Every structure is written in structure tokens, then in C-alpha cells.
Image (cartoon, one colour):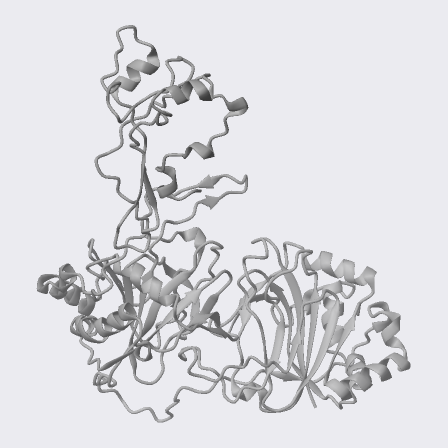
Length: 630
């Protein structure tokens, strides 16, 4: 594209090619010499203008183009009106070298006249960069504060446009439209793009996180939101909950596809109130059904939808106070603050994010303060045998049985020879772990999978929800099955004296007892977390046998062994405890492969959360797991 200055210049006589010495009007050069010299080329005033819009936004590089508009005289001339006479024919602004009708090859393009001023579209408007986030004045009103406080103290639900309070399974407050200027959310997201993010990955969680907001002083909007949280927002929450709050700790969190945060209660140290400020300044992508059609939720202007996952899920508790099932789900909504008082009943989790287009962004943390005074208990008769909260009981340990088991009919012949077992033992001595591929004979393996997929098996949910989630067969249920049933044969083999001898030949360990023999059924969303210290304080041999994995490769389901210095508390602040990125051993899920891992004292294992993104809801597989001790 040539420069504008060159477009308005008149071409010189030397720049035009004149064939055979003739001019543009067919006259010879001699004839022209007799006249007044060459006439200037035809030209007309230019009305087409390209303007660069001048805006204060980051989108100022959008061009506004004004279309060309012909004059009334030009319209008449082009249409060939008989009574046309150019009002500018004698003007120096318009001249022609010829009266020929075909010389003017202009084309009229009819279009609607442009508006007086073209406005640049701003899809994501920003607030003024010099403005600070401010609290919505409606939320600050004394009438609204007193109304919310009354419902909070009386534990009554409340639902009004500005506020929502639900009391089951525990009290959760929602402040809709927290910031007076919602455009400030775009400023915060812009500043988030300049931050350093750390990948947090452990048994409990997987997402990205920044440092504490108190250390992020270069980003004006983030510094402003931190100041707002520790002043006006903390004072408001303190007033409605009746808790003394003195400080705030917060960070930015980003959950991408497959990221999650499993069940925990946030009960740790001086935390008194947990909060989440959701940032979703965009339009939800359409949901695609099984036929590939897109469905847009036109009524949803919150920036998030249920099919994208990432909901805050509150869990109910059983009679023993342990978490069970999800009782309430709260979807992220732009410019909404969710908060709840931290306590032993506040079990919650962040559901897996299923969106491939948009991340789940939030600023989350805790308001800290002194421990509130405990209510005075009612007088009661002294208990002659007080029973404080006992530690979790250790798992039951069993001796191997001596019932006859024909292992030759179940195991591949390769593993029955002394030479193969000696080679397995040599690898165990070198690496403390070994994988026995194709352990079961194909006929027995096929009949076992058919039996496990029967609909009449009594699968039960394993718990509690803050430690594990999967289905399992009840203990000793196999005793009610016929002797030739494949499930009974497998469980009897894994707990028999003949199997103990087999393990001794493969590991050179003198094993005498076993615990936690389970046949498990895993589906998307299942997991196990690191156990308590009592369960990994002594050496042991861990055995894991995967069965019937689906053809498509899933994400998660691997068993990882590591050496934690201490058990990460489920409510621990991500990043506060040491990260354990270097696993000692990771056992990938492989069908019909038995993994034997020798764990020293202090080594623990868990099975990683099984993602919902890579498996259909109906997909599942099975795991036989058992722990053997000397």
C-alpha cells in the first residue's frame, strides 16, 4: 500500500507511457505543441477517509472506515441524464481531457450513509487504570447488613438480589456484584497475565496459584483488591458473622481443564472465614450435545455454566461427622464473593473443571483471627470412663489361610518357574519394585472380567469422602460365592499360604500377615489420598493389580508412592506444605499387570484422581489391592 502523500500527487508527464508519440486525446505531439501545453489529468475531490479511532482502551487499534459518497452532479453524469450539465465543468477542481463517454470508468457503489461518528466496539471494557476497586454501596447499606446478620445468627436462609445465605449443610454467604465497577474485573484479569504462576500438584489438588497478594505490589488492580479485602470486606464479614477478624491471606488461583481440589475442611491454625472472589468477565461458550449441536444459555450472564464444571461443592456428614455426598453446588459467577465460617463441619471441594475454552479464575483465601470463645457446656453428670476422640483404628490384619488353591490354573506358566521368580527377585533387590505383566491366564482373566461386570454384585461406596472415593466389594463377601466363581478364586489366592510363598520367591521377604485386601471398582471422579502416619510407619509390601482398563487412555488412576515429611492436612493452604513433585515410584495403570512395591517406613502411596475428561461416565475398571507385612 502506497503512502497517502503519493496517492494525492499528480503524476508527471514522464510517468505516463505515450505510444507512438501520441497523446491521450489522439493528437500528435506537434499538434499539442501548438496549443497551451498538456492539460492536467482528470481528478475529483476525494471523500474516502480512513480514520484510526482514538480511544483510551486497549482496543484502540480498530480502524473506522468512512465509505465514499458521490455528489449529486456525479450521479446525474454517470446515469446519463439528458439535462445534465456539470456545475463544476468550469472549475479547476474537475477537468477532462476528452469528451468521450467511455473515458470515465467510475462505478457507483450504493451504501447507507455512515453515522455521524463511528464508535469502536469494546468487547471487554476496562476501568480507568488509575481507579481502585470499591465495594458496592448497596451491600454496605446498614439495612442490608442488619438483615443478613439476623439471618446468619438465626441460621435462616435468605435470598435477595444482592445477597444469598444458605444454611445447609453449613452456612454459606454469597455477595452478588461485590465491586461497584464490574469493569475492574477486566483490569484484574489483565494484571493476572503479568504474574508468576506455580503449578500445584498433589494427591489433594491440581491447579495453578500465585504468591500471596500482599507481595504483589506492582499490579495496581491486584494491590487495590487486596486492600479492599483486608479493610471494608473483612469489616463487613466480621460484622455479620460476629467473629473478630484481624488479617487476610489470599492468592490468585487458575483451574484449567482437569484441575480440581478434593474434599477438605480448611480447618487450620487461625483461619476463621474462607472466601472466594470469582472472576469470569466473559460469555459462556456453548454446550455441545451428543449430536454435535451447540446450545447457548442466553439467560446466563454470569460468565460460567454448569457444563464447565468447577463448582464449589458442599458435602453433608454422617452421624460420625464424616463427609458423605455433595449436598449443595455453587457455580462461579463473575464479581461474586462466596464465604463461610471455617469449622469441623465445613467439608467442601472444587469440582473438576471441564471447560477447554475458559479457565476458572478466582481470588481466594482466609480471614484470620483469634479463636472464638467456646460456649459454656450444660452441666452434666461426670463420666466415670471418659472417651476422648480416639485416633483412627488401624486396619485389621489377617493370617494367610491354608485352604487349597490351584494357582497353576490362574497364573501364567511363565511365573511358575523358579528361574522366572529368581529374575523377579533380582529386580526387586535393585529397584524395590517390579511389574508382572500378563499375570493371569487369558481364559481366567476373561471369565473374571465377565463376573466383575455382572449387575448383581453388591458394590458399596468406600469412605470417608475426605480420604477415598470408589466402590468395593464388602469384606468376606466372597465366602458366599460358589467355589468355582472367578472372584472368589482370585481373592482366595491373594490371601492364601501358597500366594505368600510365591511372594517370598519374588521378593525374598518373609511375609506373615496381610491387610486391606480389596477388590475395587473405579469410575471417573474416584481417588484415594495419602493415609495417616500410622499406616506407613512400618515397612510393608504393596501389591496392586489393574483389571479391565478401557481402550482409551485415561488421565489419573496411577498409584504413586512418595516419602512425605508429614501428612498434608486436607485443609492445608496449597503451597504452605512442602511439595512432593519427586515421586519414589509411580505405577501406571496397565491391564492384567501386578505391581509389587516395597515401602520403607515413612513411604506412603495414593491413587491419583481419575479425570472425567478422558473417560465416559459409564467407563470403569477394577483394582485388586493388598498390603503384606513381615
